[in-house]
Image 1 (cartoon, one colour):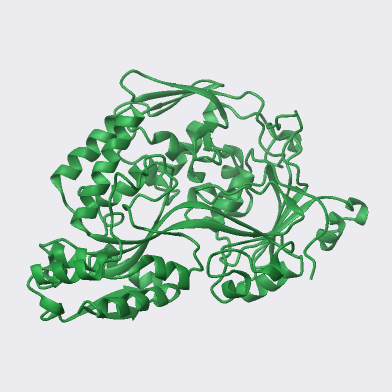
Image 2: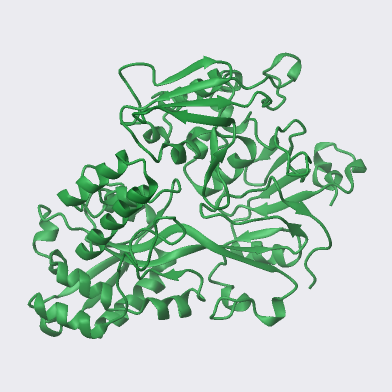
Length: 539
């Protein structure tokens, strides 16, 4: 792969032949390269290459050092002190004297975090610190160039997970102030790759940061790649064709239009693809579910049979998750027969948190106990979903017919569904919860009564759950906290304001020439240790 071919239109010569370039397509596009707007996967993937955070998650979802080499927490767990690396430099950029990137210091972290909270920034990530930091004093403080202090208003043990999010990437004040609103397309970070060019709708090119601070276990400087090229083809079929031709190095997820061509119903590569592509599957922190509005003060709920717990439980028992996964997902993902908290988190334990499995007889008994023998008197229940999930909704509706429930599937656009759920206007709806950070608290916050919608779309309200939730936030012992998490998860399952469908998985199709592309539960694209060897896909 030649950088000369890659950048030929930009005036580069072919002398770059033999360089290692990683190619992928982003069908969803990239709206910004400003970390303050890291609100979706496509943006986060690009930002992860350009920036660093104080701490980060490894492939096992453990919090590990990044810009911070170490940290300590006060006895009351409200003050966190981070000792920073002293060998980190911003990318070379015209905003710096002589165009050479300067060393990162603690004041850069103070600036970056304050910028998130600044109303003028209008960051979608400001929620990270709202209600959590000390507003009576100085929440963010540079004690010296290599020491940063964070003060919380109260203990919040998942704070390190929040600080690992791309929103908390450290930016250079000089770049933000010089480029202003155009900072979105002039990123300047400390990450393994630096910005080269971005032709929106066409391609984004990142080059190796020759001054990157990390090395591998043998002392070799990271990253191994020389460049990353991201294209923006909106058509998934075209993306798959380019991948087959060896022009892309991997695909994230398998589009329904070609999953049966590549995979068996058991989720393995078909014989004709073995040796030509690599299938990588690993747990992802994402729970797909159906939500049920349970706010009894809402007029919609007062007259709905879904106000009865037995009816909600009947729905949970009334369809076969395993069959649904086999036929509609080619076995990609785990049937959600435990709680709302997904597999992959350390607190997950399917033996201690009991969810629902397919039991139509039990479902009929529950309906009868609620006064709806064989579903009589229930009427029609409307289920709102989005186009991509209409086949799952239809499968569930057909199976619920067998226990006497008539479910009408209504397909709406995602924007409308989000609006109606946020305003408590959707009684029964499709949802998914993708973790922002690797802690079960992120999932259980969905049911904390003091939280608005989002995240509490069902308007679940349980004082016992709330007490357990608040206790867990103060608890520093992991084993005790995990036990509290499981108690909360079980209470939610028993009350059934949600119908968990499946725990998702990260699914990658990879070109065999790519080595070291490892999955992680947050589905972050980690390219620091990716290398390229050998030939591309053979047709």
